[in-house]
Length: 219
Image (tube, rainbow, N blue to C red; front, top):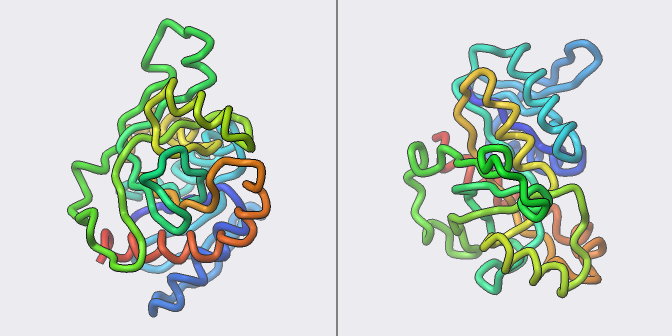
């Protein structure tokens, strides 16, 4: 069984809806006032916005469901590279926390993380005809990227293809239990001045494509 965590409620609802449209069925349950969706193969729950919230929620859900085989983070992200267009899905191979890196933190292990994508996913990058599935690096930090200048600065600094808030938190949340961690991000925007409007417009499509990737991996 896999635990799937979405940072935002909107992401979670669109993702579950997309899976249900692909003939997945769920039972909606509640524990300690927190809702989650479950079937024999997966549990889908809310991870929370931002690094610290996502880390703490990852640890919480793993304590409630210690039997899970791995955590999969599913969410939206902004593109930092011309290789990734709106609607594409990034299969995260490694994560760098750009704010910690910029602060010259000496311990690289505190801001650089490898996922288990290459060990667990055999989905080829040309698996889908209507969007790209690309494997590569993501960078995370507690900031919205809404200018091309800032996006280019982060891309040059990190070599990442995409940017979001929570990735490093998910990886950190899995460390205490040595739980395998995967992450897939649907591209909603190009990390420019229209990022917020593009996010709202493109989120359903991004989560639908993430659901198709997850279905290929788990079935």
